[in-house]
Length: 312
Image 1 (cartoon, helix red, strand yellow):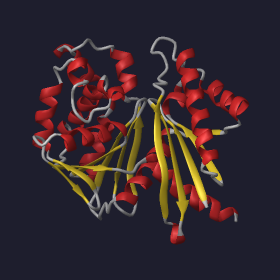
Image 2 (spheres, rainbow, N blue to C red):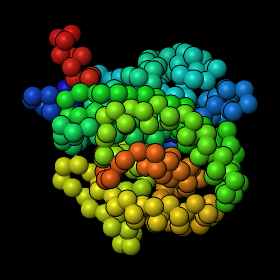
Image 3 (cartoon, rainbow, N blue to C red):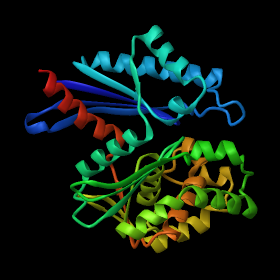
Image 4 (cartoon, helix red, strand yellow):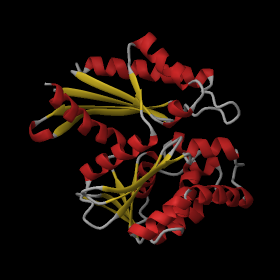
């Protein structure tokens, strides 16, 4: 059976097509993403008409892809940009009316749960608590967990596109702008600090766009040591990460566009992602950092398989 997943994120609309095997296993047949940058305006909290149109166009392309692969079942869901914007419901209705695509808008808690389910498919999280960090365009999810359970989770309005819209940083970012953003982040992640004091995770597992970008950059740069693990993604040296932060925090967009491995659509927001990661590291007792190649959409595949088994 072929299953398609359409993940309508804030910055990208992703499609993942898999073919199911025995024992709930599956093979990836196709995966791609389309940049939409759907973040609503910080002024009126509405998805602009051009961004709205880009999103519908991306869905049409993904719909054609599902048809070309003769997918048996598909599931489409939307996260922060669509659930939080004033005209998010209009976008969902337009997708249904124009394309026949039914989009489920999931809340932050559900998003965090699916991220956890995806991450644990890619690595053994062990019995000691770890902290999953998933940086999206509109929201940031934290999950403290073991391989067996979620101990604590939250979804915060700290996505890179959202922060960019709020602060409108200069190019390069001024030190006072960095400090203002750090203070804003610190205020919102205060509950994480309390949860970390209770559960004491010492490993940070990063997933999704911003961490994917870091891995792509680090794997191109021999000056930044990192090793791929057969089970567990990409291991990052924290000292080297901090050096990379120092290198980029004062960089211009043009300078970042020249970095090997960094896709252009991420170049304008990677500094904000680095600030989020560094702020998290500085307020927790994390001693190691890993990257998970799986996240939300892979967790959605697992749940789609279970759901289809129940209705058979």
